Image (cartoon, rainbow, N blue to C red; front, side, top):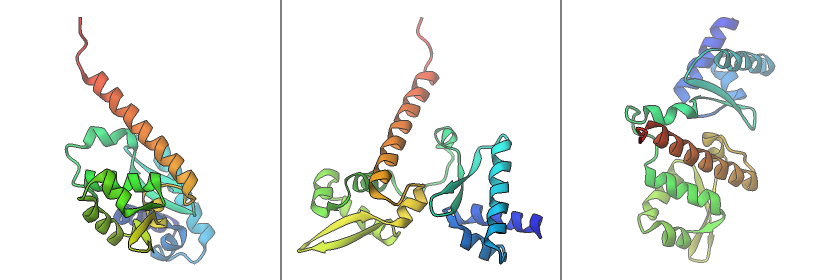
Length: 186
């Protein structure tokens, strides 16, 4: 059962394309014991860590796991990667809301432009944003699904810190890639 269950867990993490809770993983692999399911996932985490691979299984807060491309490979394969779930504009709008939350829709539109209304609508439909009404305006915040999907903490203050760190890290990596790929001048 162990080897088959582990293969099913790996397939589920791959096919989901998003974080799965240990309960979801156990249900998919038809495992009654959550501790056993967790041990199998941890074995997969170790196996991926030991091999030279572009993929990794990451443990997330809330006892969730995700199979993902290692960040160091994202820029190298961007020209062959299929279009992502979100456009660059939608990602920028989502990042802005995540960093400034809770934030009024009018402030989002002022900074991100009128196209942000379409972005927000899609982000709500995908479950990344929630809102509360305050008179005639909406006040936006990210959801637990946003945190899980992108591997952030659910607590807003820590989520903002993690997002800032990730943005800085990507900016530094992009600058390094740009400078290392350019020919050296004499």
